[in-house]
Length: 319
Ligand SMILES: [Zn+2]
Ligand SMILES: [Zn+2]
Image (cartoon, rainbow, N blue to C red; front, side, top):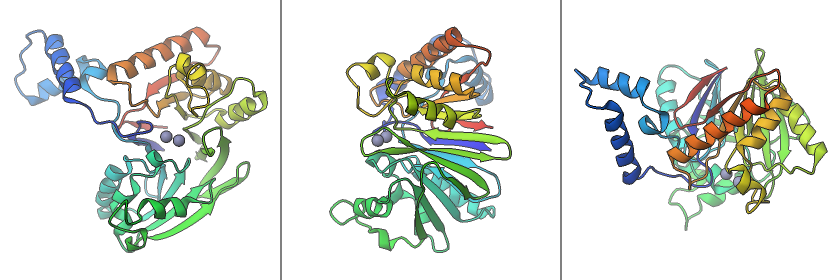
């Protein structure tokens, strides 16, 4: 299993600004400290090996879209934020290499930041492409149609040539999809959201975004621990700092890195990906939150160490 992050920002796509780019260049020049590079490869090696992540890179501009690449099989996609657009372009390249033209698309919910990439998903316009939508909500088709109605978008859904199917998945049941065992859990969020646990070949992937965890609901907490149990990767909504999530942003439907660590420790998960980044946070702030979460993990660690990463557009993680 290869997990590919195409969009990691929460709520709204967040392009990097000129001010931030200038800050990164200044940081890189200072880190280079007068060093000379003979060619582009030498300079690239320096950027890759010597610069801190937030100076040499950026976390994410596109809204939620994650791909679970199983190699030769059908595509597995989680949410259709603006990250779906670059995934669509890359899928065309892979069609050329003989890849199956079927996408299994799992929707956490139908908030705009999770469906806005679909009108720009090039494969949806190609005859012979099949799009199988899955979700806990029975209004997926309605939400996609409404998004492309005349006053909001020039091309209606019926203009798209791909064949589409819509399937509601019941939480608590085991579903067999594309050779995978798929389980669904209902999450606390405005109008509900759903998390996914996918198992195949002894590996387990969990996608759980737009989900708030209430400290006073022990039964729900235990259900999530079991849902994350022994996962190789848990993608978790860590939109807010802990302080924000328990004070002013209670009931906003999101969570924090520290809560994520507590759940993953109890579930003995192997890796945690911080996800659905707050649009207000720049790369330095996100990196700071990652380091704070890693320090908390070390402090709270029992027998099992948890590896923590901060999801970034373009990041690939092999399970
Ligand atoms: Zn969202
Ligand atoms: Zn949402």
